[in-house]
Image (cartoon, rainbow, N blue to C red):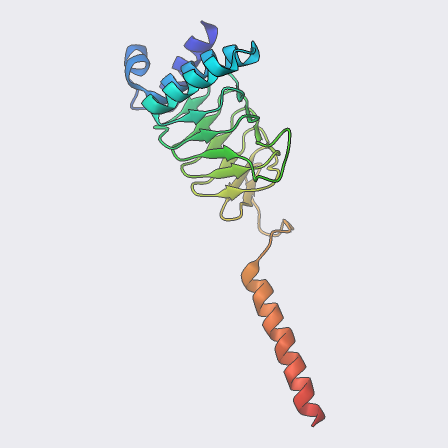
Length: 206
């Protein structure tokens, strides 16, 4: 019952369009998905895994939100709109996390055991973002819309882009942080320049 009330309050706190608890309880698919997941997760951890999967599939059919019954959700998780949200089996989500439509908390297909991300408290993940792999997104972090995050995110960071890049940290803009992110365009330009140098060297020898 405590989680039910906390989840209701989370919707009212984060969504200005939500007018009262009754409206949320009857009409919010994100809230329905969280409540049904808690039921499915209960059966999952008590080894009624088939029943847990049936409940999760019913929830997916009615809400458009797929949460594996093995995933762990903290208190006050708010899934806004929710259509297309996918949360994998070993994902762990902390308290007061906000998730928008089209978000995937998934794996890369390369890991075994813990395959999905850990999302700490008070994180916001914007629409269409993909967080892929068994790493941690730190407390208070924000993931920008459409971003693809493939590595650890420190607390209170803002990440945007493909692949995800830290643009703010602890409220300060990040300009010169060495993030060691791949730049395929620059890599190709470097290869072209190396090839041109080889050609010029051969021409000068003739």
